[in-house]
Length: 239
Image (cartoon, rainbow, N blue to C red; front, side, top):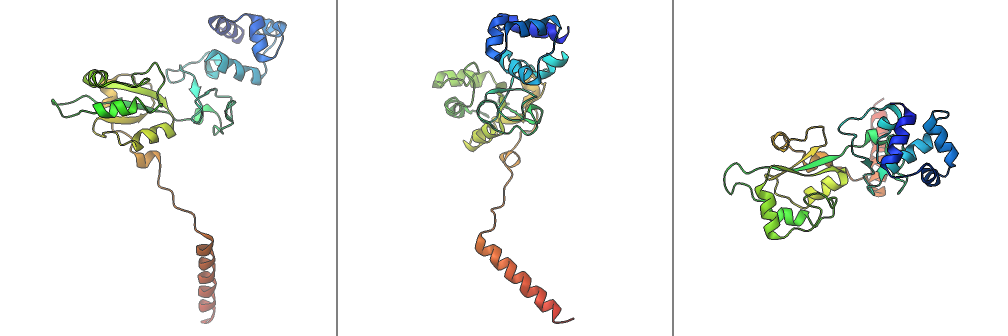
């Protein structure tokens, strides 16, 4: 399958006519027709726009390559808008993507299974997390859970509660004080087996959000300069 075929396939799967796609991109129907006939190739700007519109990766649209990790549209870690590997900045909020989506790292939240009755609970954490707004509506935590629903969900652990979380979202979840023995935050991977993921070591908040040193105040900078000059004068007195 060539580029022209992938454009036509993705357009049809999106339920768009050539004219409708042209309207979305700001080009004529004839331009779209030439792309799909292989008579011309779209500009990189239009490729990025089509990736967002169709919800496919640039690797697939341009090269026909698709990994399990890239199967879902990449999202801006700020506003969660769909972005592509061709975007240097989020087209929605303008956030810098550090060289495109290939530089984006996303995370998975996993709930571990209890080894012995009562060892792991996390029901109250599930209720709290379901109200965080960090998860899409189709995820287990996409809507606020009631006590009974949270208990049923906890009983089915280990399970994946969410994927594609940004670093900021993962930090927010850990900031909420979730029961660390019951939950794991892991970097997204192609592994989808909850049992395997639950056996891996989780990522701590200190790793996700390294401690940053506070910048020196103006007064401290001046004091450092004075001490440095005084030290230099002291050493010169012995020469």
